[in-house]
Amino acid sequence: MPRCLLSFDQGTTSSRAILFSTEGQILATGQREFTQHFPKPGWVEHDPEEIWQSTLASTREALAASGCALSDIAAAGITNQRETTIVWERASGKPVYNAIVWQDRRTADVCQQLKADAELEPRIAAKTGLLLDPYFSATKLAWILDNVDGARERAERGELAFGTVDTFLLWRLTGGKVHATDASNASRTLLFNIHSQQWDEELLQLFRIPAALLPEVKDSAADYGRVDSSLFGAEIAIGGVAGDQQAALVGQACFRPGMAKSTYGTGCFMVMNTGNEALKSTHRLLTTVAYRINGETTYALEGSIFMAGATIQWIRDGLNLISSACETQSLAEATGYENPVYMVPAFTGLGAPYWDPQARGAIMGLTRDTGIKEIVTAGLQAVCYQTRDLLEAMALDGVEPAQLRVDGGMVVNGWLVQFLADVLGIPIACPKVTETTALGAAFLAGLQVGVYQSLDDVEAFWVHDRAYQPKLEESQRQHLYEGWLNAVQRVRCGS
Ligand SMILES: Nc1ncnc2c1ncn2[C@@H]1O[C@H](COP(=O)(O)OP(=O)(O)O)[C@@H](O)[C@H]1O
Ligand SMILES: O=P(O)(O)OC[C@H](O)CO
View 1 (tube, protein in one colour):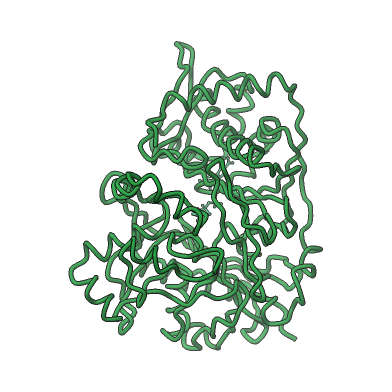
View 2 (cartoon, protein in one colour; view 1 turned 90 degrees about the vertical axis):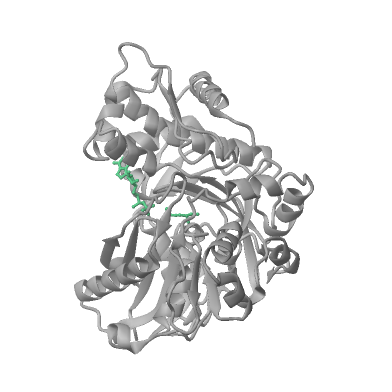
């Protein structure tokens, strides 16, 4: 009986491959960082060939470290940075342009022009659960078709294929045999109707996207073909695909309505399971597909923050105030909660619930005795205040979670997580296995090949590690948060 599951976890800054036991324990990991390209202000690109090579290298590293025979692998799952848009030639598999990354704002003007028709955004939101923002794939895809020589004509002739990163990897892994995505990834494109679960004709026309480009949309646990044997030495069944934040919801075992997780990596993404109801937010959160299994769609509400760990990277690499992210904890401990400095890291505008692409970052409340530690602490606090913004929006939508499960690279910082509990006023739980994104994809793959019969089977594998209880007086919690709201108000440009 095969005893492990392989996960390809293709993130914004690195590609990881993780082998899990069928009980959800990590057996081996491989990881490769790759280059971030910033060709113009507000533009962010990745080289798809580098995404591919780093995926191959990290997988080979994990396979070698695990000592697992390929025949031990029951199935593989793919999870990925979402929205990032790639177009390639069907004949050669060669991309026609770099991947336009989810953070890229080059199509902000296009979105702004479309918003001039006040009825359009609500109509799009009703179909897709999303807003008119450059974050999503549709305007990025249109940009490639309009700016790469001959791309539109070739797309119309059926010579090109579009995909988010899962689809591109699937194409490459299967040797060009499978052009597919899952419903959770499709739901981030602005082209997919989350109610009918189909690509939407009206949206394709609006964004001028030829249907011939599009992949088939499958369940998140489905037959996605097999990894070509030439790549790792034997075929491996691909049984699961999900966008990374939805996969983390699965890896955090948030299977019941009201359960929520928040992932603190480059950005922060808070996702709450809303069951089979596509709950419509009236406070600018996104409605999205959490996962689709056996044709049954589970929906989620999501709040997306663009700058979480990336704020700390900027403090480290842009300002050179620290030499490593882990220094932030002791600096924050030395500063304490009553920090008069507020940082609003709106470097690429503000995401949920403000959706203000024109807002820009600011540091406020500086005095003559402000030093490095206050600025660093303000960076950590900003991540927590932004999470509170999301929680407030969920509460106004009538679905506040009673507890939050957290993961991602930042949650090793105990000060940050305690401050988060204090600012939110709800308990926070960290699991033992924090690679929840990869774990979620592995669970979906295991479900498809019969390692598990249902998601109930994997619930027991979520093992609690640390809990943080809120300790702050309500009045102090409010006082701190009001300082944040005031700071945000000052950087807003309106949207
Ligand atoms: N001790 C720490 N305190 C605060 N932030 C940290 C700490 N360690 C890492 N980080 C931040 O976590 C992020 C990395 O998290 P990770 O989940 O690997 O990101 P991603 O998957 O988006 O590439 C980095 O942006 C880094 O700045
Ligand atoms: O790769 P991450 O972890 O930064 O996640 C990126 C998100 O999927 C973007 O929506």
